[in-house]
Image 1 (cartoon, rainbow, N blue to C red):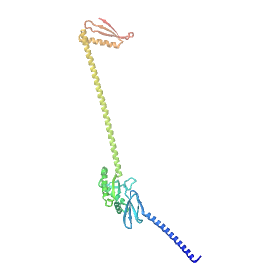
Image 2: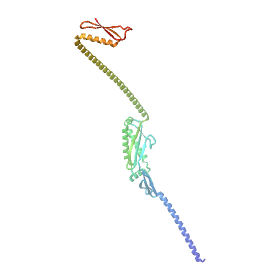
Image 3: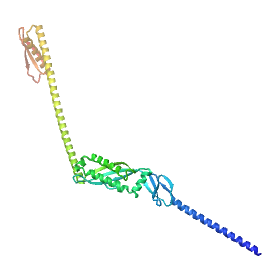
Image 4: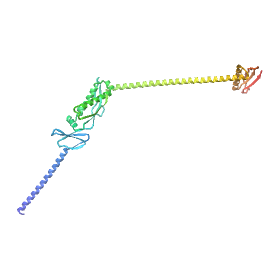
Length: 351
């Protein structure tokens, strides 16, 4: 192989080596670019969920760049960071029972008695970029609930309760609850740090609880009142039953008396009717046989006596007639003997 040919071989070898180096360098740069792009994408891509707002802050510019409301995915610069603000409805519960966000509000009445007030507040952050930015500027740690809302509510409750005695608290509970709601809502809406970024939906007083000994005394009083009402009810019931029984007996006695009067009157009327009929019959008999009324009456009694004796049976009768026009018969019953037959036999003998 000649000298020229050797040089050509070396040049070709060097060219091949340079191409390989360039290729390796390109691959390395590509890998680095991909890694950097991945890192940048990881720090630049972000998302925000429903009911949230993402506040994008640029520390280099020292300002809030933008506000994104969820749900969405967005891109930010790698050095920028986000603060997430919950913009859906939120409730704060201050009460004695668990679970709760905060304990009930303890307050002193005008006469120094301690009461516990259970109260709830519902609110939400106004979902506009301006409201969210203002809230973040005023409360970078988003501690507006602990710093403003809860202390303000407790202050209002204590102020209202301090104007009333314990007796007023018990007797005017609804009125006092309405005052607490009114003043608390007013104070929250007028607070300069939250009034343009927080919407107060409602404030509700759930309960006003007096001291335990007062509750026990009230329960004893209510129990005594219930017992008194029960006793009064039983007394009234007994009186009503007694009156009803007496009235029933009076009505029965009146009915019996009325019935007796009716029966007596009916019997009297019957006797009168019978007497009138008898008198009429006697007059008719007297006219027929030519007797006066006295003689007719004697004859009537005579026949009635015979009728009575005949109805009784078992008797023997001797009938002795008189003489003259107006005969007065004599009825003489004979005593019964064992041989006498039980029949009514009448023997008439003229004198």
